[in-house]
Picture 1 (cartoon, rainbow, N blue to C red):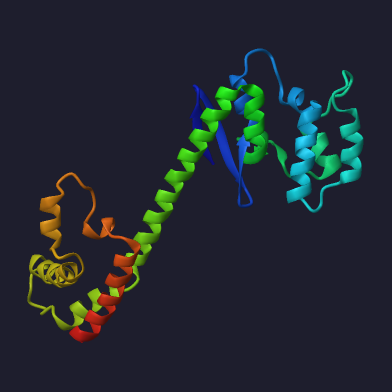
Picture 2: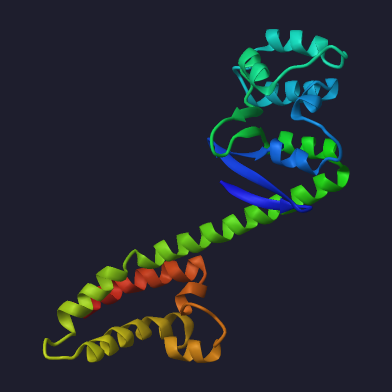
Length: 233
């Protein structure tokens, strides 16, 4: 579950399967006047769009029931809830959720069209905020992948140092120097500088030199740790 803020309106985003669904119940708070999601759902253009989307992405969509519903869309007497629409057509484009994060949720494709019904300005801002959220998620994913990659042969390397280069009579501080020296052998080979030299040159950066390495550099370092462990043995 994630939240974005669009024109002072907080909007919830959840995962259903591998897809992002955006809360229409939150979004409609940005529309002037007393409107409900059902007011949007009864619109004929809305029904046509939902039908096309379901045709492309939902092989289990009930076209027979949908045709009956669509034929009534736009009439003054027509009204249908999200729950009834889903139950009758087996739709996956919109979902009614209960519980802590209850409300009406729609696949992002549908939610962006719903945003246009609220206002063109709101649609532009929600697309912008959604893209920003995805970019942040990708950065976090990339950071996590890099950290995991940096760990692959780390313990092989440190175990080789412990077993072969650390005499039992050394103090913990002296032992830490040995580990740091061996790490810097690889840092200098890869980056041309020690960890301390990098910190001195980048005092405003958090983390260490390897946190800012590229994926290719981390792959090289991982292989070098493995090789150095063999050389130490």
